[in-house]
Length: 374
Image (cartoon, rainbow, N blue to C red; front, top):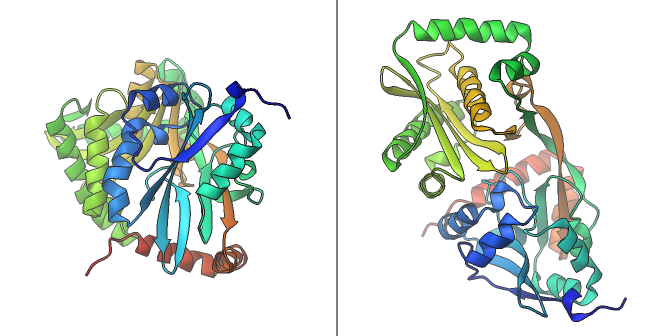
């Protein structure tokens, strides 16, 4: 296929790439990427989480050869998992949706540049296993770019509900009549306990107070379910707190509920193109187990989002039942996996064939994210 210079791309690895640069901000703003490729999110992930997880940056920067203009960024990491070396999206257990940072049109152009595709595939090697998970749709087929096997559907879904104004109309359409009555009753019960207030954090002091409260409430809750909470690890607490502080007022909103001035609930979320993406929540379940404060909190969040003009309330990944109770509709997620060695092939076979091995491998992978200790 004939190509002129404007259709030709230069591909390189730039492990010191500046995600807070103006050129990346412009690329991201015009791209089809998700909130989890936002400049603040990725800059904080590479600075705070990657070193703690022994993950090395692997940032693929693709530019127009004729102009040098940034056309696409593929943010990845190299992560040791036991004896194997994996190449993965920059995720490290915090990102819910993953995507190349470009438009679908540029991605399609890149696929036509055979030389650029071959260069990219060469630069990401060596690896035992390449994993690209949490992909939302097929508009940018990474498997074609990487010459990998066809994507497969993941076992979990994402959930989102469309918001409509006024709030009463959305609630009537999203929640069942019986659930609306139940929440109204719970709210009356809660209001009888004291002075109830709902607000959005607007300064660093209120954000840090809410983050500390979330850590304290989430610890016992997740231990009771047999799984550790990321917020209990210093590096993850530092990550989420930094994102909340640096994204305040634009990219991040942190809602709190108080009883007589004491924090009893909080919801941390990202704001991106009319969508409000919930990434973390915490509630004083022990103190208010009969009042469903989690559900009441989400109802207040939806009300405020509608008043601000948000169009989507995205509960992100996970098949928890409450998401459907708030009108959440499931959407599938996909993963692309490629073996790069015999060891990788054996691991990939085991992951796909035996559910118990898959579960054990997942636990091992999460364990390996702990920082190495001497």
